[in-house]
Structure formats: C-alpha cells, structure tokens
Image (cartoon, rainbow, N blue to C red):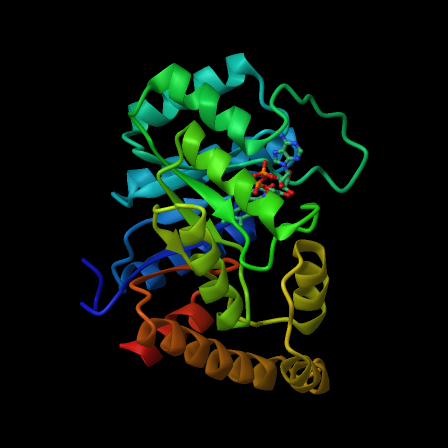
Length: 279
Ligand code: FAD
C-alpha cells in the first residue's frame, strides 16, 4: 500500500547506459521505494543493447522484491524474440507489461519491424500468453503527433483495448483540461478502462522543450516563459517545476483522479517532493 491512502502511484525509470547511471538508479530506487509505490515501470530502448539493459534493470528490481512492469515495443521485436521475452518475464514473476509501438533509434541503426503498431503487439501477446499479463497501453490527452485527427487517435486507443489492453497511462501533459476532455471523449467512445495520468517533473528546460515538441505536449505560454527565464539556473527551475507539478496533481486529485504514474527520469528528489506535497 502507498504511504498515503488518498491516491496510488507508480514510477517510470529508464535503463542507464553507464555504470555510474546504474549506481544512481539504485539510489533512486531505494529513495522512491520509501514511498511504497505500486510498481516501477522500465522503458524499452530502441537499440539492441539498450533493450538488453531494460531486461537487466527489470531483473534487478525483481531481485529486490519490487514489482516491475517492463515496457515492450515493436522496435526490433520478432515473434521469436517476443516469445522468449514473455517466457523470461513469466519466470521472473512479472504480471504486468506496458506495450507500445516504440520510438525508432535516433541514429541509423538497422532495425527489424515485424509488428507495426501497438495493437499488433498486444494481439500477439494475448495469443501467446492469453490473459496472463495485465497490459497497459499509451494514451494521448493532446493526441499522438502522427494522428491525423483526435477521433482517429481515440479510435486507435479503442483498438488497443479491443486487442486486449486493460489500462492506460497517458503521455505527460501540463493542462489538466486536456486530460479531462480526453476522459470525456473516451467515455463517448465507450472506453471504460482506467486511464492513469502520466506526470513528468520539470528538471531541464532544453530537454523539456525538446521532448514536449516531439511528443506533442503543450507547455502553457506563461509556464514556458517562466521556465525559460530560469533555464540557466537548474535549482530555481526545479523548484518552479515542483510547485507547478504539485498544483497540477492537486487539481487532478480534486477532480477525482486516484492514481498517477510519474516519469521520474531516474531522479528521486523532484518526484519524491511532489508526492510529499500531495500527502
Ligand atoms: P500506437 O498506438 O501503435 O499508435 C502510433 C500512431 O500510429 C498513432 O498516431 C496512431 O493513431 C497510429 N496508428 C495506429 N494504428 C494504425 C493503423 N493501423 N494505421 C494507421 N495508423 C495507425 N517509447 C519507447 O521507445 N520505449 C518506451 O519504453 C516507451 N514507453 C512509453 C510509455 C508511455 C506511457 C507513453 C505515453 C509513451 C511511451 N513511449 C515509449 C513512446 C511511444 O513509443 C511513442 O509515443 C510512439 O510514437 C507511439 O506509441 P503507441 O504505443 O502509442 O503507438
């Protein structure tokens, strides 16, 4: 059970590339575990070695008795590889997966594509393992950047549920209106699965702008200007971020949200303090 009764939460981490990154992640894990999250999800990298690192991080979390939710993507995924990975996760006692299409590698690494969309991967997982895994999928309150219309994006979300998804985590957002409008729209499409808001702490101005642009999450102008003016002052930027994101979560809680998924970016402090502010 979480440290507070008001809401549940889980954390996303990514597999670090270096030994130092791995040590830092161990520290982050220990600090965030004090809050008793439901689980940690571990992202799936685009390249082969990063995908192997995801599995290693999942193994480490499990070895520490922590519920881990591996992400699995279509990138470089073959039927054979999927079968082996699912088998490994079953042996580790993993019960839940986060299934996504996946981002392509930023360099020119050669990749294999046997599954085109998350829907196809979900269908294959259900075929191979029936209802063994709880499957989480991605949802987009401000719509996926490649969706040609909001309705098309929600129809795609619905197809993922029909293929076997049990719940969803949203892309991060800074406008709670976008989240509630999305929930309303999903309701009109008879989508009834839990849609858990994905929350990102704010730590680095340049990276935030870059990532928000890529994934289509709008940073409100007033917030953008504030953050920009502190772009060379990471301590103040983090403080503004903690205050803003705590208020965002508070507003979501007041309007009935009962669970959050935090994109920790492998750092404990901002997420830890945001949760403390909500308790
Ligand atoms: P899909 O649901 O497959 O949809 C992708 C796009 O294709 C959408 O625009 C959709 O409308 C369109 N589409 C779907 N089906 C069809 C069809 N049949 N014909 C035409 N168009 C179609 N990326 C990683 O690389 N690793 C991770 O670990 C990772 N974790 C994530 C976790 C969360 C919670 C979120 C929100 C995102 C994550 N991502 C990750 C990013 C994700 O891979 C990208 O956002 C990706 O571009 C879309 O993934 P998806 O599963 O939503 O795609």
